[in-house]
Each structure stands twice: as structure tokens, then as C-alpha cells.
Image (cartoon, rainbow, N blue to C red; front, side, top):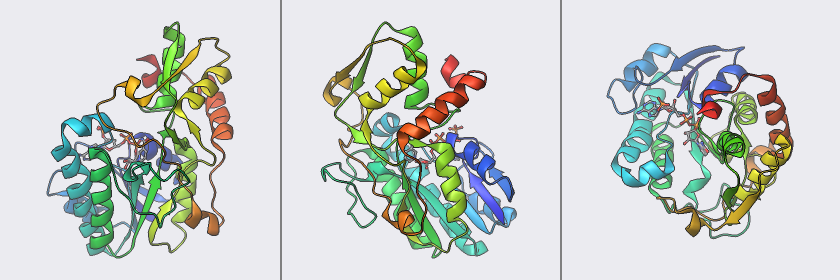
Length: 286
Ligand SMILES: NC(=O)c1ccc[n+]([C@@H]2O[C@H](COP(=O)([O-])OP(=O)(O)OC[C@H]3O[C@@H](n4cnc5c(N)ncnc54)[C@H](OP(=O)(O)O)[C@@H]3O)[C@@H](O)[C@H]2O)c1
């Protein structure tokens, strides 16, 4: 299969390159490939893909709150460009979306049939991206994931790994609950999804759930570090963008097809073994 990966040098994009190595891959990387530019179509047509894995996005949740127009332009208008071009070339589209399309008020796992209601600019832009993907490309699957981390990239796990070695104590939000997802595990699941004729919306997050505080405690414990991790509230965390408090995803559609992602604790344990055996990433050094 010829597969075009957008955002190929992002944390998921790099894992997709690994998981899909048996296919012919065309990598779309900013700034040559820019979702804000009208030549997106030219790139997609030139790639002659059978499938487009659209992982490129404006992903800075707090940044999006300060520049919502840019987030919307990249995540919604840019996705519209990708979707129209994918339809034109007759390929299928897999659009990566987020648990932050939900408002967090449900209190039990969100399934694919639940109504989105984003409470921040990033979530609104990604939801609009979902709508445009589904509207402009008939053969589209929206895959919502959450709390993503990989060896390369700015993510919560790499941040805790670094801070645990630098600070005498950590203060971590304990009132947001979600599903940590290993980018490599998601990439493996997406490689299986590509072999199925699936359209619509599917959730794909690590099994099990926790709070950011529980996740930080697990990381520190697996590091063998003794730094104390104090729980704080979202309000005390003082981030620019509001955060939904509960975004556990129920992966019902994929589970019915026999595709499940490993439990977050198992995935984290494996990840920690991996980072110990390779040189520290740029993100961990910073
Ligand atoms: N990270 C999470 O926790 C999370 C959770 C749920 C869903 N998701 C979704 O999963 C997907 C992959 O996320 P990720 O964590 O791999 O994100 P990431 O590491 O930030 O990668 C996103 C990629 O998109 C590129 N990009 C940004 N603006 C662009 C533009 N205007 N044109 C073309 N490319 C552009 C980035 O390039 P630069 O690095 O050069 O800016 C980066 O390579 C995204 O769609 C995201 O919304 C992520």
C-alpha cells in the first residue's frame, strides 16, 4: 500500500514510520508540507496514495487558546484541504483527533456515539477538523486518541522524566482523568486498522485510566526515584486553556473488531525499559 503520512516527524508520525515500514511511505513534513498553504492538494496528488494518515496538527493546547484562529486554520481548514485532495485521488483518509472534543462532564467512558462538546480552542479546532474530514472525503475514519507519549516529542511522560531528576518535589494535577496512550501502540493499532474497511469514528486509547498525578507517581516509581509527587487541582495548575476533567475513551468500535491497545501501566513499563536502553532524547535533555 502507498501511504502518505502527514506530520511524519511528530511523535506519532515517527512511530507510524516504524509500524508501517513494510509499506511504501511518503512523508509530509512541515515546512515543505504546510496545512496553511493551498498547495496541500499538490502534495497529496503527487504522492498517489492509497491511504492518507493525517497526523499533522497544531497540538499546543494552551497555545491554541491564545491563537484560536491559527489553531482553526491548521486543524480545520488544513484538514479540509487534505480531505478534498484525498477524495480527489480516490484514497482513504485516517484523521487523528482527540479526547478533548468532549467536555469531560459524563463521568463514565466516552464512546464513539457520545456527543462532542469541546471546552477549549484546541478541542473546537480538532472537532471542526473531524467534520470537514467526514464531509469532504467519503472514505474517512476519524481516530480519537488521548494523552499521547513517545520517545521523541514534548509530552507529559518525558517532562516528568526530566523534572524528576531536576526538582526536589513535583506538583501534579490530580483531578483530571484520562487514558495514557503509547504512540508506538497506537501506530500498531492504526496499521491494523488500515487493513480494514472502516469508516466513521473510532476511539483508540491505552486500556485503563488514571489521573496525571497517578501517571507521574508511576513514572517516578519505575525510575526508582524518590522525589515526592504532590497532588494539586486543575485550578492550582493554572494553565491557559480549560481542561475537561474526565476524558476516558471507550474503544468500543475497535474492540468489536478485536483491536485493543495494551493497558497504560504495561505500556509505560515497556516505554521506561526502552528509554533506559537508548540515549536520552532531545526532549529529556532540555
Ligand atoms: N499529543 C497528544 O497528547 C494527543 C492527544 C490526542 C490527539 N492527538 C492528535 O494526534 C495527532 C498526532 O499528535 P502528536 O502528538 O504526534 O503531535 P506532534 O508531535 O505535535 O506532531 C504534529 C506534527 O504536525 C506538524 N505541524 C504543525 N503545524 C503544521 C502545519 N501548519 N502544516 C503541516 N504540519 C504541521 C508539526 O510540525 P512541527 O513539529 O514542525 O511544528 C508536527 O510534526 C495530532 O492530530 C493530535 O491532534 C494528540
